[in-house]
Length: 167
Image (tube, rainbow, N blue to C red; front, side, top):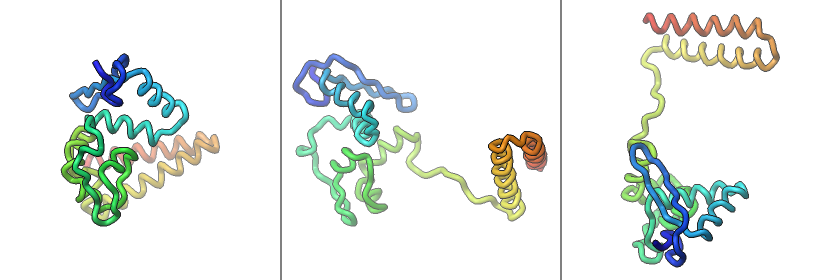
């Protein structure tokens, strides 16, 4: 079997990436695997992530043969994104929508953002703020090795959590 990266040498390595319930497998030759290992060993995470991104998306066709999609706002091309793993601007999400959807679904399991939402009531917002403040103070007390104060703050945090659980 030929290397799926360079398509020249015989594949001697198998790279498997698990995405949710699906496993993507790529077969690489020694040279391409060495390039990936050099990227990892040199600390060049950007190139390593680009290689993994290529493996995940199954981007097997050369960039010249693909229809090149360009963001109208920042002029970033799809091949630039695939190589770097970075989008140029918010407009890239719209320009590369078709290519990003399956990738986001594989990586995150969904295509819509599901981050934190603001709390419904003002009391809930104050409780969260107080909890975050107590957590910061407790971390500071631990860093200063003031364990007695840290224990008191921990107890206050537990009391707040119990109060929220009852409500």
